[in-house]
Length: 259
Length: 164
View 1 (tube, rainbow over the protein chains, first blue to last red):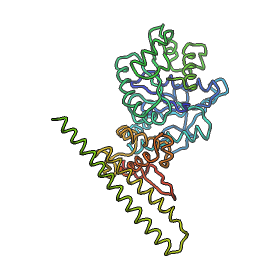
View 2 (cartoon, rainbow over the protein chains, first blue to last red):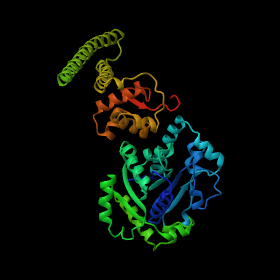
View 3 (cartoon, rainbow over the protein chains, first blue to last red):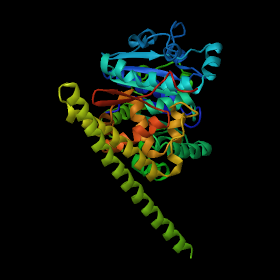
View 4 (cartoon, chains in turn purple, yellow):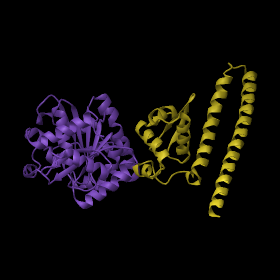
């Protein structure tokens, strides 16, 4: 079963953070113990979406070997209904911290990979977390490749944009395949309103074009844009079609049905 | 003409591989005989408990590993020859640039931190001897360190010692 899930994309603005938070929240609402990690150190955003701006300890400190992971985790379970547990490890949004993370050398990145890999023991095995969701930075950056290597399953977010399609194809061939990663593709911001109804047709099209299974299709919802990142959608809008699609994606990952 | 030349090169390579293998085999047998004799002689003269067979087995394992590395290097061509310390640490970019067979082994050792060839082979579903050869190759390339504890050889990434 996939325990560590990385959400990645070739380009920015494909909905990675939206998917990461809502996928993690979907698992937590179903009674699981989950943690979402903000690994986009160049443009941190999870702290704003989860309204945890006053956090004192950051994921940067864990990767810098300053603090233990438990010091960094923020318990946000009260934000959700249900029996599950919802934690977040946030990237420091300070300019100095962003600059610092951008200037790390290869040796530091190697150690950072080791620390991400060790989460399997500290969080999954010892503290009985059910899932860890990595929200990564777009493209081929060290932090995102580290996240992909450490993950069991990669959710690839893409849109219909021509440059995104080509880049995603290249990335699938030259990155995920080399690391032999299990991958599922999410087509986001789809304008065709019949897309979700014609899932089988789209699924076949994705498999032919990208050679990976389709995990889900997310239509372009105006309500998401209107929310301006102020909602955990699956919690605040339980009857919205987006919530249902996220539920379906979580179920597929949990039951290992992505193939 | 071009095809003939290629056939000649293939045949030469075959003969060369066989020659290397038989040479290594002869050296190997000589070493076993010599080593066994030496160990028995020393053990008998010092009146220590006779763990001769165990010691011979350990020595055989070491020789076996060395032979596997030589065969592996020969099989994968000159480009795979170890050339001292690497320029880069064993990070994701190094992993990406590695040949597939070594990347698989290196990724498992990244996940495990420290493991024997047998533990690695359980995860890669390749033979222990094959993993042993790849691990030793990574040691020679400078990406891994090796440590012996009794009969077991542990492989690990030296995170402090690697060059930046």
